[in-house]
Length: 316
Image (cartoon, helix red, strand yellow):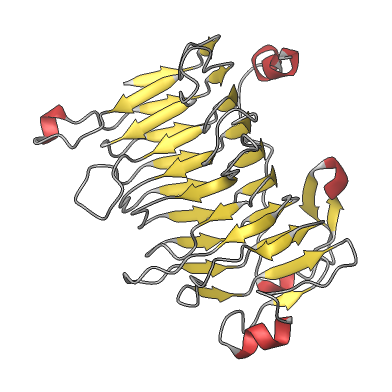
């Protein structure tokens, strides 16, 4: 099935749903192999605030690409629907070139630009842009760009740009078997990353990412659940407000002495114009020496004629 170039808006709940909340017993009953591409999905949750732009669960080998999703009261994209490492069918999905922004909108909390649950072997989240993700400011007030919730594992997350979030661009790096590489996490308010330790193997890998702070903390104070198991290296860290960049209250050298980030650096990444959300790298960026590969956002979001691509500009 292809769901392509639709304008889906003014919604009581969510926009597109693929799959079910429980695992199909037989392959023939699984909603697999679908393509959801080049859709403009926005302005939802008017009746059921927890509706998301695109919900996918117990379904495999789907491609979610080139969609623009915004103005929902909960997460933009939700993938997976079991809170553990049990057998499920949410695997080998590709989520790429989507533009997801202005979600949660101060109405609900504990969500993200993309929210994942459960084992998702072979799933790839790449070349997406997630931004302006702000929750209800009660207790708890939590919203991330990329949110690995319970059981999340087995995914590759690369070449994404995440900015303007409350509690960080990334949540739960201690989840097992996830590779997070070559992403930009910038302009978060309270923290840049939440790290938790889980005991399952293999440990996740967090490498060749840029963490760019203008305020707040780099890491969330995890109340003793600090993640030292996941493998962090070749990352670049920077903050611009003159405050010390601390790693759980420690200096960068003390942090490295404990094992993580042996080849990482603290340096200005030299974005072209971060205040205007232009995260292209200048030619002399030190991130390039770490092996960071520039992220091309020119194909993110809607594609096709200008009249279609420019439609989101008309949204209030």
